[in-house]
Each structure stands twice: as structure tokens, then as C-alpha cells.
Length: 114
Image (spheres, helix red, strand yellow):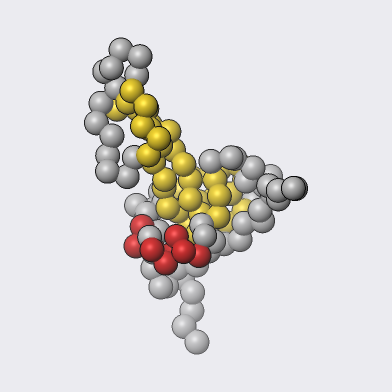
């Protein structure tokens, strides 16, 4: 079976990014929790729910986080994947919301009302 690994991201696409973290107290959304060798910390994964702002010529995906931060991630990063329709339905509140007057390509240019 051949799996398609290349996904063409477009502005407005909802994506999920798996982040590996370490801390003494994993949060409620942590998964794949493993204790450290000496038991002081835990290593775990957290899914981040982001939206695609745009994709540049070098195949870098520009992402907008829930708190408005901009991130640049390679489109072939194995931690980045498109959100499934059921994840958007169940966890839609975790994805960032863009203001109605902002464009996905340039947040400094407001979209004109028709």
C-alpha cells in the first residue's frame, strides 16, 4: 500500500502539530506519557491546533497559533498533519479564530466588505 505523504496546504487549512514536551506535571491533554530515567520529569506529546496562514516558495508552511503567534514549519515535517473533519467538529474550539476583517495572507490588510 502506497501512502501519500505530501499534502498541499492552503491558507485557511486546519492543521494539528504534535509537540514533544518535558515537565514534572503533564497537563490534561498530554498523551504518550513516559517517565524520565530517574523519575523527576515526564516526556509527553501535546497536540496543537493551528491554522495555515500561507505557504511560501521554499515549501515552508506559515502557521497561526491560537494566541496569534506565527510559526514557520516545513511542509514535510512528520509532526504536522491536516486535521480530519471529525477533529474539526469535536475540537473546533481549539483552532484559532481569525478576526472577520483580516485576510489569511496578510493580516495588515483588512478584507473589504462587499
